[in-house]
Amino acid sequence: MAKPLIECVPNFSEGRRTDVIEAIVAPFQGRKGCYLLDHRADPDHNRLVVSVVGQAEPIQEALLAASLVAVGKIDLNIHRGAHPRIGAVDVIPFIPLRNITMEECVQLAHSFGRRFQEATGVPVYYYEEAAIRPQRRALEVIRKGQYESLRQEVAQPERHPDVGEPRLHPSAGATIIGARKFLIAFNVNLATSNIEVARQIAKAIRSSSGGLGSVKGIGLALEGRGMVQVSMNVVDYEKNALYRIVEFIRMEARRWGVAIAETEIYGMVPAAALLDSASYYMQTAQFDPGQVIELAILEYLGKEEEQ
Amino acid sequence: MAKPLIECVPNFSEGRRTDVIEAIVAPFQGRKGCYLLDHRADPDHNRLVVSVVGQAEPIQEALLAASLVAVGKIDLNIHRGAHPRIGAVDVIPFIPLRNITMEECVQLAHSFGRRFQEATGVPVYYYEEAAIRPQRRALEVIRKGQYESLRQEVAQPERHPDVGEPRLHPSAGATIIGARKFLIAFNVNLATSNIEVARQIAKAIRSSSGGLGSVKGIGLALEGRGMVQVSMNVVDYEKNALYRIVEFIRMEARRWGVAIAETEIYGMVPAAALLDSASYYMQTAQFDPGQVIELAILEYLGKEEEQ
Image (cartoon, rainbow over all chains, first blue to last red; front, top):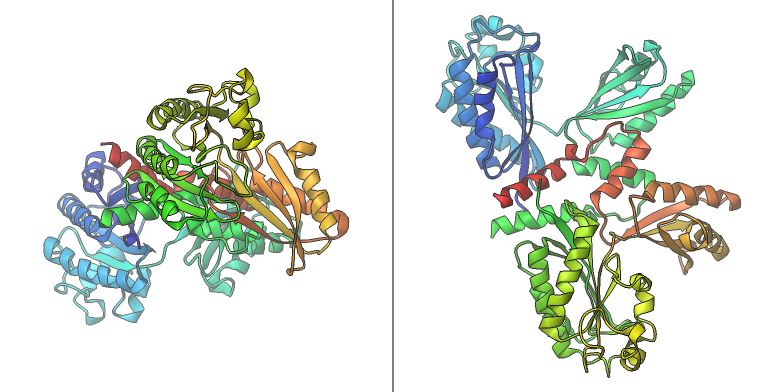
């Protein structure tokens, strides 16, 4: 079996100062076993989202190095931005990709949380699958009132961090570390300018109003394009396959005689999510991802490295 | 850019003697940059088909080592089997996969052909894209009458080999070397036991009777399963996408009120072929294969090795 493969998507509270952004990203570059897939700095959000995949050990080394830069350079007391945050290193999720279980990623989050707190002095909250207090599964609960409120309320027992003393780092705040499934950002654009169609369909498909269990979604207007969008996060693509989401929306849109104009996969996607949908539409029987040349090579390279 | 990646599918005229098969396959195993995807020995055909992917240099080294074994162990004068052949090493096609052009694979076939002839003393014919004489693009033309006829006719100018003297190797015959596109073996099974339906659809879709330019196909009965099959080779999946083949057959089958029961991808398939079909059915706009995590990692690993 090839080496375990994880994704990690750390969010840092800096989206404006180019030199700081570059210094945070640098430790993720040119490191064996740590592959920087993407990094996006948003000036309005004043936030940097880094996406890396690879092996746990080199990713953790890079995270620690990048976090020390962020903690040294970002002062939450003067940080302003549209996105909620409680820390210079705001959120670090570990995501299982191949040959690693969610339980192992939870253990990784916990051991990394302790290392992180020791190295930086920043207290840590565990969220999602790694949550120790059940109510902290939801990011919003931990981040309630953001840095400005948490600074005061951290002394209250129900807001104590999971690792470290019950006070925030004076400039870098606190950090949320956890484990979660891979999330696919998936949009379906509809051939109508009627926003109500997108809103009704989003309501029908999203989990929170009783739709598909792993779909979050809202209806949006795509100004200037004469289309509306069902904008979704698929939080478990194994439970709610992409093809099922497409066909669900196609079925609902028929109520208004509206067609699907196009779909969009935003950012990264695991091969399995697309192969599963190809397999559905093409009715391939007994298809094995090992038949895909590139996946077979990747499996080989993983084995080679182990030797 | 990641390293060029090729596939090679050498065919050897031995499908029965296990020790000889193992000795031929051994050089392809445990060699860096040469990944053995599959090998199948067919006793009826008395033939071994090996499928490897990787970089040109290690693949050529493995090919030479395996060919020396085959030339030493296989005597065409006593070889019998259902599959046509002219040599112990019968056919060696080089197939471009990534970051390499067909023209470069043709050059590779030509330079390897000279190396092969020098190392083994076996004369070489070039076929498909690597053919020097236009009529030799087709394997059947080179292999006409098989070893037994070619042994006599090789002295005639129109049957002279492209490399080496105009006589066969006394026991190993001759070898056909070339470059071609990746071939996908794709079957569509129909929910009927009427063989005529499969035959008519195969006739409608195959290139030779005026159908899709890159499809070869025949109609077969799947005895005991109550289904019939359109059994195809797709010789250029970029020109005739898999989804188009599925929908073409669905349309034709409607004439008899017959549905597609399932499809089968036999053997290896490049990721691009499936992603393209997923993209068609799901209507994904501006989808980039680099968004697929595994393909992004493979690209990275290729770059790392270059450094």
